[in-house]
Length: 66
Image (cartoon, rainbow, N blue to C red):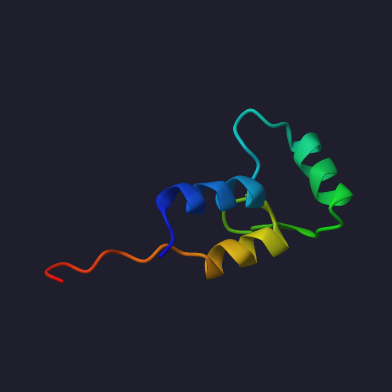
């Protein structure tokens, strides 16, 4: 089971933080040799590989009554 803290940590890697400049985020992706993607719908930029890992790392909700 994945905790919310672990999920939040993975999210920090995939998307730029509010304090991080776009240029710094792009440099971080280039240093790690990771491709970046720009969402055409909402104009968000993200690390493609890290975002894919975050999607696989989704936390499971607790089952009620068990």
